[in-house]
Length: 85
Image (cartoon, rainbow, N blue to C red):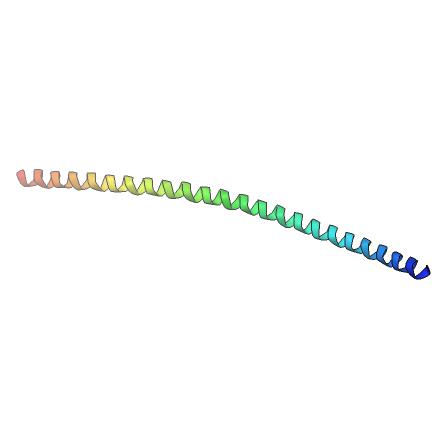
């Protein structure tokens, strides 16, 4: 009977230790999960910003091409007028 009581007390202490360890791991998991969520949010925001900037860059490149074409047309017209004069 004494041996059983000792085993029971030892097991009770071990259970408490494992519960404490499980709580620590759970807290660590929750902290890491929270950091992951925050990082994913920041990543999504950065990806949206990159997409916006890429779209803006494409728009500006198209405008540049348009104005280069306009410049070339005007230059041809100017050359033709200069030769005519």
